[in-house]
Each structure stands twice: as structure tokens, then as C-alpha cells.
Amino acid sequence: MNNERNNIINNIRKSLGRAGPICSEEAKELNARVNKPVRNLLPSRTELPKNELINLFQKMAEDVFATVERVKNTDEIPDSLTDYLKKENLPAQVVMSPDPYLDNTPWEKQPLLEIRKGIPNEQDMVSVTSAAGAVAETGTLAMFSGPSHPSTLNFLPETHVVVLPVDRITKNY
Image 1 (cartoon, rainbow, N blue to C red):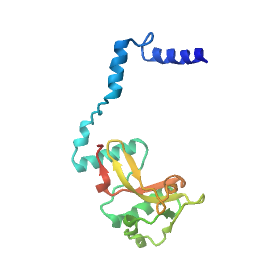
Image 2: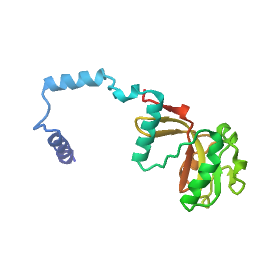
Image 3: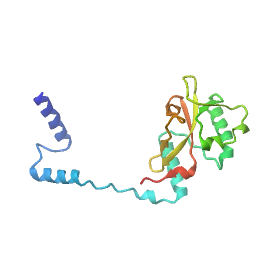
Image 4: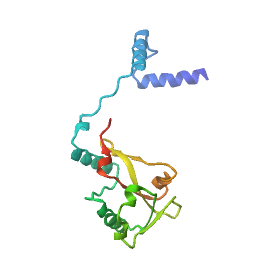
């Protein structure tokens, strides 16, 4: 067992470019770094104006194969969603949770769009949620989770459509 442990440690040392155990001077330096961590530098792009943060979020999200469709206001969301479902050959049935932002969306503009609110089941192919926030530098979404907004909406249906108001896109802090 001790021999296996030494092999693992020696392999780690080799990968770090160290021939043997660290000397006492290196140990002091490493202990000092561990005991007083320095906050990482934030990329300069975090100082972008709001419209450039939005563009950056879109680029970063698309870089990880998300589809981004911009609309001017909530009135355009039903048409945009319906167009997306048609383009992707998806059914016009979606499941979503109660959400004040989505509840104020004029879904009646698309009478053929069937919306069920609640927990998704295995037959649901599309869910629609809003996001609590988004980080522009990484294209990351922060999702709601709770009894009225089950996280299964984010994972169970094959297609997850996220409605993201631009005022929820922020920089990395």
C-alpha cells in the first residue's frame, strides 16, 4: 500500500516537473500561498458596457452550442418559440413552471401552442423556463430551483428553452 502511494506521489511530482520531495524553502512558500490566497484577477472584458456584455453572453453561449434568439420584448416570445419549435421539428407542446416573467408573456398569441405548467414527465420533449441570471464571460445560466420551479424542467425534457431578460445578464464578480 505504501509503495502504491509513493508511486502515485512520484507520478504527480514528475507531472509537475519536480524530481523529488519539495525542499523546506518551497514548503514555506507553498504554505504561505495556501494560508493567504490571492483573489484571481478578473478579465478586463468584465468592464464592458451592457450591450457588449449581452453580445459576449451570446457568443459564449453559442460557443457551447446553445441557440440564441433575441427578441425586442416579451410580446415576441410566443412567436419566436413557435418558430423555433417548427424549425427543429418539435411538438407544439411545452411544460413550464409558474413564473411571473413567463406568466406575463402573451402566450394566447399562439393558440396552437399547448402549455402545461408543472413537473415534466418522460413524454415531455420541451420545457420553457426563465433564468435567474447569466454570466456573460462564460455563457453560464443561473437557474431557479424550488417547489414551484422544479429543476427537472432544466434536465428531463430533451429541449430546454430558456427565456432570459437582458437585465439578468451580468459580468463576473
